[in-house]
Amino acid sequence: MKLGAMEAQGNDETGPRSVNPGGPAVRAYSAPRASAFWVGAGIFLSRIAGLVRESVFAHYFGNSRAADAFKAAIRIPNLLQNMLGEGVLSASFIPVYSRLLAEGKEELAGRVAGIVASLLALVASIVVLIGILMAPALMGILAPGFPAEVRDLTIELVRIMFPGAGIFVMSAWCLGILNSHRLFFVSYVAPVLWNVAMIGTLLGFGHWHSQDSLAVLLAWGSVVGALLQFGIQLPFIYLRKTAEGPAIGAAIVLAIDTTLAPVRQVFRSLGPVVVSRGVVQLSAYIDGVIASLLGAGAVASLSYAQILYLLPISLFGMSVAAAELPEMSRATGAADEIHGQLRTRLIKGKRNIAFYVIPSIAGFLILGRHIVAALFQTGHFTAQDTLWVWYILMGSTVGLLAATWGRLYSSAFYALRDTRTPLYFAIIRVTLTAGLGLLFAFPLRGELSYVLLNLMRLPKPALPGIDLGLGVVGLTFSAGLSGWIEFLLLRWALQKRIGSTALPDHYPSKIWAAALCASGAGWGAAHFVHLHFRWADLGAILAAFGVVYVGLALAAGIPEARSLLRRGR
View 1 (tube, rainbow, N blue to C red):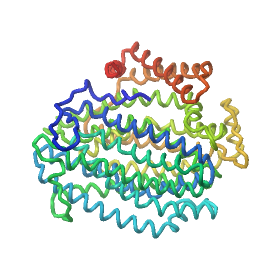
View 2 (cartoon, one colour):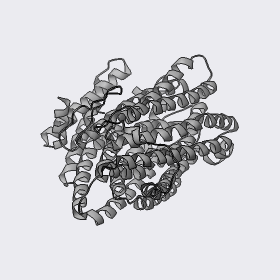
View 3 (cartoon, rainbow, N blue to C red):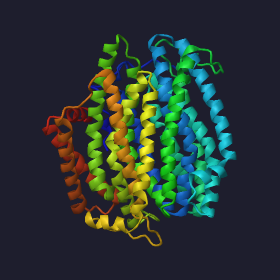
View 4 (cartoon, rainbow, N blue to C red):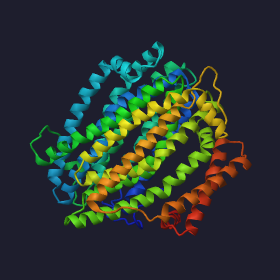
């Protein structure tokens, strides 16, 4: 993955460094063209830290029952984080807050921000308390396939990690404030501290404790990391000076008041978005339930694959969508003018996303085994585990481009103050994911999976006492098909409102050709370059892949390749 992937629309334009006596020195950006780069840079660093965390986790836990317990436990409090966190605030709070700033109503914007923070803290505290008390009941619903000892461990872990989820909700509020002021980097790099806290816990206690005890300590480490992630953002809100002089947070006053019209607008948008996020979490819940019934190691294997699958979504989908949302929300003028601005931003955003996501798909398909082995194959994580995770990753690539483009189109709807249309299409996707997941997962558990592996001339993994088959691959494959249907519906509905956002026909085909050739170069490097150190071997593979891909893209005249080269220089 390349940091330059965050190339936004055109050249990098920055404003002067703000005067900030007594506070952090942060560059203020007068144009949005560098915004996606800084979002992506922060995400890149946090994801790299996440990969290191997962590599260390795999070393100590592998695909054990304790790994299943921890992966299942961390998903349950994440329900709260996802229901009230970044995605929800991006759709409801940022458009309102950004518009108030654009209209010069800083004092009103601060009042709205303080009220939203107060209400979020109140709701999150109540939900955390309920989650701690109801952890056994939640486990019976969310992971019914676990045996008793794994279930008991998971309940303990859930109770420890729930307060951290509440802290993450407030961290997402900080992100909304900073994004609206075009300070993107700090919020997206803050999760590095969460990852560092967990890595430190594993390295500090891993050699001295059993897997079950280590899982409990790691849960506490995640809570400490959440506090660090939240705390690092506060100085940039309350100490960083604005161009007018006072700090960003000077006008923010905590209060409970729902009489303000902008606050009511935030919460009118919040309802559909919370439901939409709940629907998405229902899909994750269904996948978790099915995975828990597919055999030992299924939940952990799915989680390892998702770490890699979510990397390009975060780097190239979220970075562009997150940077574009405040800018699209600030669009003013007649309806035709606003629609024209949205079309321009969407087409450029789609081009940027495709330039980086399509080679990610090709790399996962052809080089995924080497990537998984370099990152995770150590300690309790064996070569056979690598094969399972690679196959799951293959299934995940089906919907990768749809998922990243879908984020961008959803941001356009949110900028138009329409949170209901993405909700309707999310419900369709989740329904299809559940139905297709059941259709594919269980039939692919048995001998059929091995027939398919033989047809594709892929090796058959052999894990002692474990027979997963390709059931989890069926889950990710079905989710990808459903994601494409959701994206096509989003595109159809948006184009009815603002006009065509299609890319030139030749553009995707050029990228696919370059990506497949680059994957062949990476495959050759994997077979002929042996540096006897897994990270060095992976570096050689990715270097061959990247050089060939960028070179062919330049030869094909793709503008994004030239922008990447300029940024690299």
